[in-house]
Length: 359
Image (cartoon, rainbow, N blue to C red):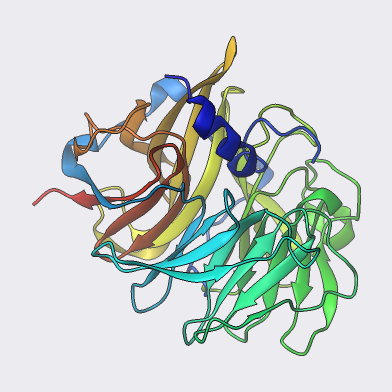
């Protein structure tokens, strides 16, 4: 299925971190042991499935497409809309409230993307083209925390327990740490130098970091791409871990060059959504037709803390609710996990949807 002309305009914004654009709090994750010799990989055709255990429903429909989504500790959802540069608050019953319309006057261009919820109703989001991070507090006051070392097309931001921000400084190929007192340092990566190397601090290399999460044990997790400028497909292909001292290791990698990781969320849930002690990962993946860049299919999958991937919603393209094995999404772009389900920003359907275990 191909997007309509109306949707194609909006797709420019989502796929700054995903597709079709050439140039360019705290979500808990637990430890996962990883070395280059134990790297987990996944291919499209070899995945086991637990689709029969889940069902999909739509909780919110809009005239504008939600892109990235996050959640606070009380279960409130928040999503970004690059299409018109807005941020919304959303209850799990589907009531949306506009938090902010961000300006186009140089303070922020039409490019709000990755979003995270902090404490007391505060939300942070990355402004890609503006090269800034925006903060919106519970009273809807908008501010921009200064970053002394500058940012170049940041795609996403994560929040530590002490309100430290960890920024995916995507086009600078690095992770920036911004403390609550305003001190900015490079945690990992070398400015302007892309690559795939694991290592410590400036010896590590990144290509296109599109998603970032803060870990419960103090580590950072990111989605990174295999190459620096892989137009038109710039979504990630691997999950990487960054420790507090800046040590980078690659934990999980896709083996199919036509598949990508759009976004991910951690949760102490196994593939059947049972509570677990270790943290695991839920992924949004896209599969493209190499002969038609608009022919894309979405999958939702689970990756265990040992790197085993299992399909939850199989690859497809559409707007079908119901049993997960028959359900479909249209360019799903954001994911967050709560105790009662997996919440998805379904960009192509201008909807927020939820995947829950069948009763």
